[in-house]
Length: 229
Image (tube, rainbow, N blue to C red):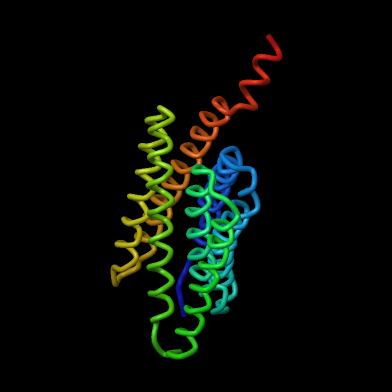
């Protein structure tokens, strides 16, 4: 049985809240670039949040009742992988004014990849091939999303946002390395939680900063400013 303190499990929801704030601003920024991408942006953000909430809830149940609901733990990457891929593709499609075909591909391809993960998991139930596969897809989507946001922030002359997005992705890889350590003591888990919280705080700040820049430069804002003069 996994060992978590209740305090650690409860604190796990803090970075999720910060991540939710960041994902909100990323999704509405995508909508500013292309309104037709709104639903996909929301879907990607919701899937990512659902994965985090499921894992945090599983951890709290384990800490409180010593009950392991395995599907809640497994749902993390089954939600994160398609969520990250959809959101990364949405940022690309919306900011480059791609059409309906690109939107269909953005929805269909991650769905097929998750179906493949389910098939791998069912075919080799004693192995972790499905988890490793989904982890690779999540990493791919996360890096693709982060690189685009860093570049978009740089182009919008928001250096602080670029730096914070970079710090966020750097922290993700740092936590992945720490998670592989064999001795997952309470102290190490708290370090991981604090790094994650700082990382998601940086993500939320950067996402809001980028949104503010894109909003200020959008045609609707410019028209409103002219009308009020």
